Amino acid sequence: MTAALGLAPFGLWPLTVLALALAFGVWSAAGSGRAAARSGWWFGLGWFGLGLCWIVQPFLVDPSRHGWMAPFGLVFMAGGMALFWALAGWLGHRVAAPAARPLALAVTLTGAEYLRSVVLTGFPWNLVGHVWIGTGVDQVAAVTGAHGLTLLTCAAAALPALAAAQRGSAVPAALAMALTGLFWAAGAALTRNLPPIDADPGAPVVRLVQPNAPQDEKWQPGRAQDFFRRQLAFSAAGPVPDLIVWPETAVPVFLEYPGTVLEEMAEAARGAPVAFGVQRYREPRFYNSIAVLTRGGLVAAIYDKFHLVPFGEYMPFGDLLGRLGIHGLAATEGGGFSAGPGVQVIDLPGIGPALPMICYEGIFPHLIGRYDRRPRLMLLVTNDAWFGEALMPYQHLAQARLRAIEQGLPMVRVANTGISAMIDPRGHLSGTIPLGEAGWQDAALPPALPPTLYAGWGDWPMIGLLAALLAGFAAYPRSRTRGSH
Image (cartoon, rainbow, N blue to C red; front, top):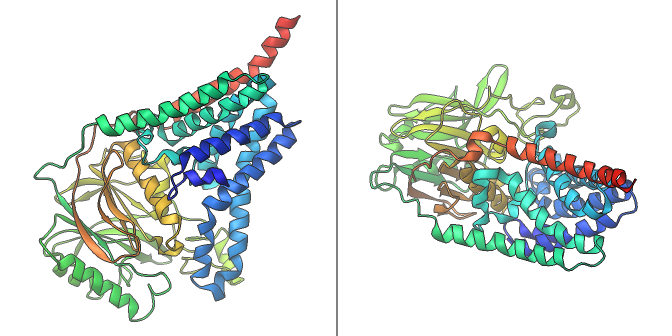
């Protein structure tokens, strides 16, 4: 559990390195692969138990309907994710000779973190490498992605365990301290020496609109209109920007049955396009979408969310479970929302091509890079009100910052209750609206950087490196055995 204190909002990354060093020592000393798996599971349970404790909050928005699921949600999520760490412990113990086992475990844990990012739709939340977000070390992600950061972290933590594996040698522990210090120093140097990304004087101005609607009030009759009027007032205030962005599900109507809503929005925008979250209904399906509104209340572009939250936006076997009274948290019917066609670049009038994402989609770097033309910016709208004001909004923002670094693109991030911000291609924040506050903020759109290595290659180089290292560890004991004869 101590290791998770390196994650946002705590940011105590030295504790992560120290706690993981202890974990690698215990795993290496385990008497069998099964014992190493048990140790891995318990360490994983602590990591996910603290890092994902916010998972109970959505079940408490409507406690009479969903409250009974809250403890099961945390137990099953933390315990299920910890199985990947158990796999890492078992495989690292089995594949390597005792002398090399700590470093092998660093590789298998990195591989396990990759697997949980993609298996069964994936959940790459709170990866080990995320502890470096905001430190300057995160700039490495432009080359390696988040899994490269994880491998660097695990390697530094595994070195002290080599001291025990190699009969008390102090060299590995010294190397661990030196390597960790090198990470930090390199990050500080990168942060200090990289030239700032200043917006051009003629850069488009984007208005971030944050209504601060508590989830238990968001759809109440009367209150929904209050929040809608608040967004209209924020859009109509001050000078006219080049783009206005409202958060996820920002309007209290379906896009196909808007009444006068679109005309009111266009009037408040005074000619500026408005990108806003909205629900759509095309019989018999519901979609969680982003629409772009232009002058006169015309819809110029629509994006439908394609990576839906299981058990939140849809229920597996939803029609059957719906008849039994079990529904997804955000579902309209038993089956919940339907998935859109996939990654899509849309055009924002006066701005250029944009890569839209809705909430959960922003945590999947291996999906984000699948665009057919490079966008000018990434556009993420979200409703973090489901998760309260504790850990989750800060962790979600941290991952958005990493996506900007990985792609070398600015990101406009607008949330219902925070944290809304303009994020430049190095993950720096501007135009921030804090958590739990209503307001609007104009921010100049930073320029995009040239495509990063990660944007071009994705995770494939890291996958190849992990496979090669794993094969090397597997071959090491066999070569020693042959040599003894």
